[in-house]
Length: 64
Image (cartoon, rainbow, N blue to C red; front, side, top):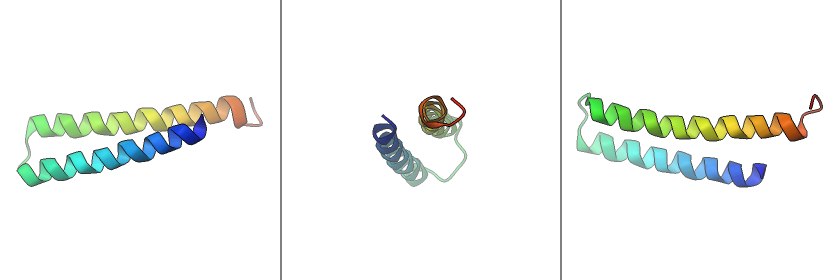
């Protein structure tokens, strides 16, 4: 499960980078909608990282 989530994290991070490059290509100005898009992609990455950490603590940590 951790391996699958790790690969999912890499995939979402690649998509995040692609979305940011596309947004920056469209305009370098600060645009409120583009900021929301970038924040949502960052939130998706954060959710996967948090899930990996929680699974690690639950199943692999000596403290579990």
